[in-house]
Length: 294
Length: 206
Image 1 (cartoon, each protein chain N blue to C red):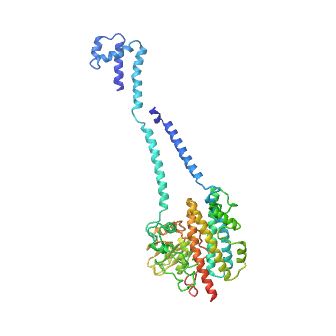
Image 2 (tube, each protein chain N blue to C red):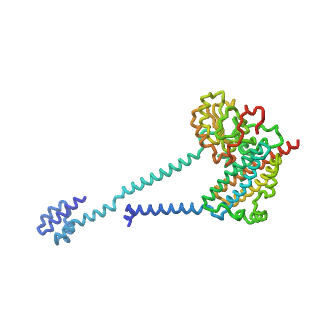
Image 3 (cartoon, chains in turn red, cyan):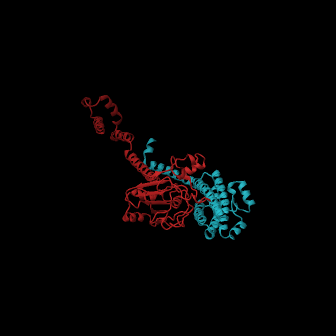
C-alpha cells in the first residue's frame, strides 16, 4: 500500500516540476485517474519543500492509521498471562486449604446427616434436633456409666466393634502415644476418644509381631494416640476417633497415617476439647483382672 | 483519548492503585473486626479466665486430697482442660491487643449480671466464697470428694450461664465456638459430678 502511494506521489512530483506535459499525464492516466492526480499536484507544485511535505504527508497519515488499527496484543497477552497465573495461584491455595480440611476418604462416620461432632452438638443446642432423633444418639452421649449408685451397669455396650464413642467410664486410658501389649477396657478407651485421641486397634490373630512393631512405630510417642490389641475385631487394623472409624486389612495402607494426621485432636470431632491424655488409667485387662478399673 | 488505556504505564498505574485499595480494604476490615477492649468478647474471655482459675484451684485440691479414684480423675480432667482454656483466652486477649484484666466483672453481660456480681462481692456466677473455699480445704476423706462435687456443680452452672450470655451477645466465631463447647462440656460434667457424688454418698452410707 505505502509503496504504491509513494510511487504515485513521485510521479506526481515529477509532473509538477514544470516539465510535465499533457502527454505525461495521458501516459500516467493508464495507472491513475488523471483528474485526481492533477488535483493532488496543484498545491504541492510550488516548491521542493512542498514536494517533501506532500511526500511525508501521506506517510504520517499512514502511521496514524496504523496506531489506531491493531490491538496492543503484547500488552493484552502479558496482562492476561499475569491474570491467569494469579488466578491459578489463588485457586491452588484455596484447593490446598480446602483439601486439608476434608476428612480422608473411606472413613465411616456416625454423625448421620451432620458432618461432625461440632455440627451435631450445635444443632442440639439450637433445638434443631433431639438426641432421640439422631441416627446414632451415642455420638452425643458422654455420661460416666460408673457415675451412679448402680454398679451393675458399669460395662457399657457399644454399637461398633471396637467402640467409636458414647457413654464411658469416669477415667480415660492414658493416651500419650501409649502402646498397650494387652487389651484395654472399652469404657476407658472411649473416654480417651472423647479427649480427642485416636485409638488404633489390631486383631492379634491376624497381625504378627513384625506387623505390631510396624504399627507401634506410628503411635509410640505421639500424644493423643493409643494402641492396643482387640481380639476378634475380625480385621487387621481399625482406627477410632470420636464418631468415626476406618478399617483396613493392609498394614501399609496410607490411610492409617492420614487418619492419624487428620483426626488427632481434630477441632470438629473432639467431644471434649482441651482435655489431656495424661493422668488416665494405664493398666490393661490383664493387669486389672483382679480389680475393676474406673 | 482511548489510546490512553493502551499505554502500559497507565495500565500498571491503575492496577497498582486498585491493588493498594484492595489491600487497604482488607487491612481495614481485619483491623476493625478485632474485638475492642470494652467488647462482649474481651469481657467474656477475661471473666472466663478468672472463673476458670477458681475451678482449677478446687480441682487441684481434689486431685491431691480426694479419696475417690474416679472423682480425682474428673478433677484432673477439669484442672488440665480449664488451664488449657485459660491459655486460649489469654491468647485471644493478647492478639486483640486489649487488657488482660478488668475491674468490672460481668459488665459485658449487661446490667443485671453486673449488679448480681457486685452484690456478690465481685464473685461471678457460681463461684465459691472465701469461706466455702476455706471449709473445702479443711475437709478430709470422702468429704473432700462430696464438697468438691457440690462446689464444682454450682461453679459449672455459673459457667454455663456466662457462656449462654456470650452466645446471646456475640457473633464472633471464636467466642461462639468456645461458648458452645463450654455449655456442652460443662452440662455433661454437671451430670457426671452428680452421678459420682451420689455413688460416693450411697457407698458411704452402706
